[in-house]
Image 1 (cartoon, rainbow, N blue to C red):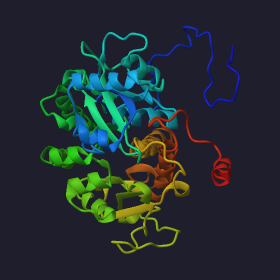
Image 2 (image 1 turned 90 degrees about the vertical axis):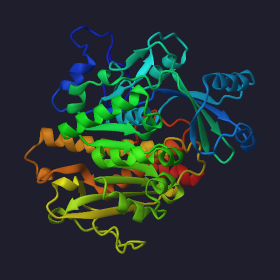
Image 3 (image 1 turned 180 degrees about the horizontal axis):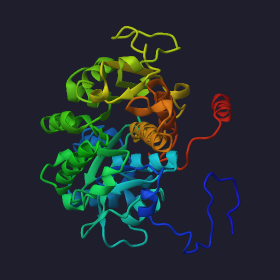
Amino acid sequence: MKFPGRRKTKHYFPVTERARESFNEELARRGNVYVVGIDQLLVDIEIPVTDEFLLEHKFSKGQSLVIDDNLAEKIYSYFKERGQIRGEYPGGAVGNTLHNFSVLSECPSVALGAINKVIQVGDYAFKYICNTSSKVNLTYLQPSDKPMGRALTFVTPDAERTFAISKGCMNSFRDESVPTDVIEKASALLLSAYVFRDPSAPIYGATLRAAAIAKNAGVPVVLSLGSSGLVTDQKELLLPFIKEYANVLAMNRSEALAINGIDDPLLSAEAMLEWVDMVLLTVGSSGLYLAGWCDREKLRPTKDPLHSKSIVDYNMWEYSRAMKHSMCTDPLKIYTHINPFMGGPQVIKNTNGAGDAALAAILHDMSANLYHRQMVPNSPKHDASYLTYSSLGQISKYANRVSFEVLSQNSPRLARGLPEREDSLEEAYWAK
């Protein structure tokens, strides 16, 4: 029988053998595009705390640090017994982004990492799987004897989040577990700077191998910078990796300052274009910036008013589509900036994951470009080797809207895609 209700995707049951399809067949089907990501699989345990609690335990506010598993269990048990745990959610920067990408695009994605090989109903691994989109392919995860990693997420009254990580098996993913053929056919490889925290961990070597495979296959490598403290500590490792492998770099303002010492977001993005092909820089209540490269012959002028900040008329070419610098005959830097959607939510319930949500929108657009090139190779849309399907200005609107959705909810993972119409949302917003 057919399930009732209006759906973009039709779901039937019972499932017949003829209709049953494996993930591998879905990835191989013509016209199907997907993103691969390497992640330190974690469960986020959200705990409201005071600033005094952070000071007492010497946790640096807004940063991410690794703590002893026994201390993590002690803190968890303390708040659990008092009923003060707000929620337990599947986490991990890459895992959140893959989930949101699949929800937005209704396309598959592939998660690579390590997970506890013995999964019981109600445990952390079980909760991770149950709360991850069914479009995220988990069949390539490496089984481990260790338990699932945990991220104690301490939320202070100002909504700032501080992470204390109990590692478990999150760093156990080995380079021999990297599926070469899956990466070579992906529309992008998504990585996080968090794996650079411990260069001796197996997942670090696996990340380097995956990045080399992607580079050799011409698959864009997308790197999220993680946290400013991590960037500061591992800058000597990160910078050579970025220059060698990364095509797209995503970060917030403090992470950008840590990587290149430039506080002005526009000038910071301009400087980072010397390393990569495209930059996403989120600046909290000031919205986000996108910067990229485009061949002079393919430039399209904006139809919106010109704006000047640290760069005069910086948005002049924001209607242009981003390209790899290496594919440009006469490359020119292009920029755009957008303020938060509708000024931002009246009540920000969650600052964790807004940047990852914006990155999911960008990955969706990059995948759409590959999909359209496969399906309509002779289209004028592909008169050059573009990195994105849409213009920089249009992508910024999409990324901005997805960030708003995450800021408005408790979880960094979208429960559904964006509404088909925005007018009802705006009416409800302004009626409050």
